[in-house]
Length: 97
Length: 184
Image (tube, rainbow over all chains, first blue to last red; front, side):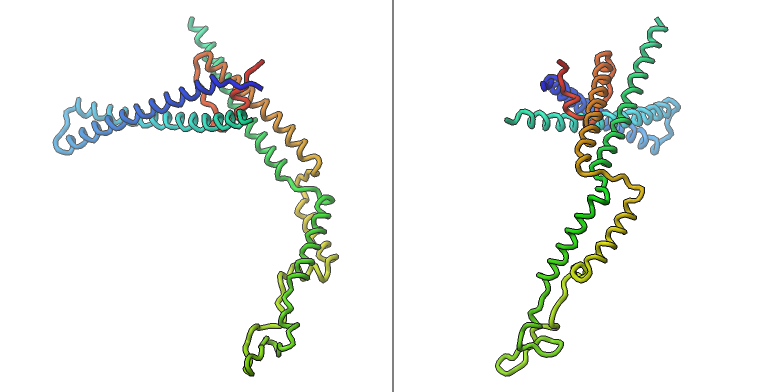
């Protein structure tokens, strides 16, 4: 039986892309989290204007969405990573004389 | 135009549902394979195993029993003591030590042990699926063929979705033969 090693390469690339996406989202989560913390500290020091309050709410919502997206990207990377390990193990066994 | 988009969405939904159903089928087949691998042998095939177990236990008992205290001419009383330079020295606490009691039972009354074990096994096998040794391999092979076919169908559905621009994650434990096989 012949096996499609190009497909394995495509899956490797997808894994790398998923890792890059997870890292990018992680950075965004970190930045947004810092912005939320900053706005919350500001709110403890003084009364925020209605626009600032609205912005803080928006930031909090954005942070939640980003965290969900980050978890999803992380899961996708884990799944692809395990799949690639599984396929590479099989190919190396098949290639053994 | 709107109609066409709607149909595409339906087609994708239906393809994803198909993959979900295949995944349920794959899990069921894996469970069925585990059951076939672990199902006990029928009673008539277990009886000779029980017989061999009884013989082995009885034999181990006979060879394992420690009679050194009993055989030693210097042993006295319930405790084993030896005279050393005219003084009694305690070197053991009994004439003989008995190894496992199951071995004793098998050596003394193998028929009763056999009868007891067979009745216990028969009771435990009631309502349990048993598989004769010569059938097990064939049954597992048949399930594995069905499993591979289901995984190939799953991969084919995922590949079609990918070609249409929709991404559906593969299972990390997917069968590599299904994921990487090249259709001739």
